[in-house]
Image 1 (cartoon, rainbow over the protein chains, first blue to last red):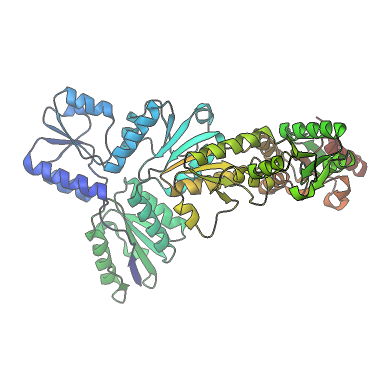
Image 2 (cartoon, rainbow over the protein chains, first blue to last red; image 1 turned 45 degrees about the vertical axis):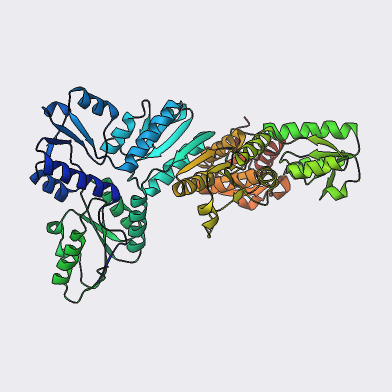
Length: 285
Length: 285
């Protein structure tokens, strides 16, 4: 067995920033609330839970104190409502997402129909959509094309963690339907780099272990990309999910991690594989 | 055998215009020159040749008289040169192409890198490129991506007769490489309609007969699209090219025609098929 890690590992820039802000806030106060998990990684969520970050479903569940806006951002309407009820708001939205929110707002104000490529149920997409009234959210090509056919002066933006293949496909199709179109590739550079390094590695190995939250969009895309390259991909959240029966012992194994996956998890997986298969060779870099 | 014609038939708007202008010009004068065939259909070319339209390779071959600018257009440099040497210039460029030339010029003047999707050897593309100094012409995805990676502020336009599938593919790929992009789908509406009706028909029949000039980009794309839909496609220029051995007699046959294919050719093909297979049923509409 030969084990290799994908080139891009560890927290992305945005997760790192949000994580540190949450640590600082919870160290100073005990009235810090987040609406939903601050990032899509269960280990980080548990750590901050232990430090007193309170996770609520809605603003109504926050009596007073601080609304901590997580990495994915929030619709401006929610932030205005929080401020209206006297909450202190700490904005830890990923700067890449903030940039896309502002862009979507500007494009809408210019009279364009904003099309957001991404999952309508993902909090980042909901936040961006809040900045672009009248926008269209598209995760798959719709069976009913009438909405996109009727739209005029379309400008496309994307969820920061969209699969690049899906971006290419949907942009191409929308462009073919419109005389004039603006496209902003707001897939963040970390996601693009992580997808590229997962794709390269998956092309060289038999089995890919993708580590990250099962709810994490960017992590799931790494598994999809690995399968598309012909590797067998297993998505795990932590060491306990790893199964010995997935391996024969003579294969090449690649490890890729999501943007909110702590770096030590990949090393733990390597340790476990070397325990099971002592002849295994690993690139620790 | 059952024979059906694709919904869109006959000359497109631009070819019709150019053809009529050429008839009018040649009726009035005998010093009318075109650089290259006025449209990519040999029957029309022969007819206008008989009426005295002179086909030359370069401006140097025109001693005096009229330069008839054919449907595909010409680079502005060539037109300026013709005017400089005292020629009378009659512009019969397809209005859709003129619109794209003007757009490419405007985008270049705004400091954008114009990417023309199309065949670099096609006269229409050469004409548009003449209006957009510094542009990139792309017919296939390049092995060396450096030129497209280095380009800033890209605006995409297209040859009027590009295959829509290729447009989607190339636009998607370029968009994935750039933060901001403008896309103008300058595939003309006739081409889009002809491709759509050929695709629909090819999906229902066994064999497609595509009639048009073998040099005609839009005709060749109809054959490609038909094959992609699973039909066997034969590209013919005229009745003489039609082969009896292509048919069994019990199949469904579709007929599609290019933008510069005279309408009577499809009917001639139907006549011939009915001669060979008297039980055949044909939709003449």
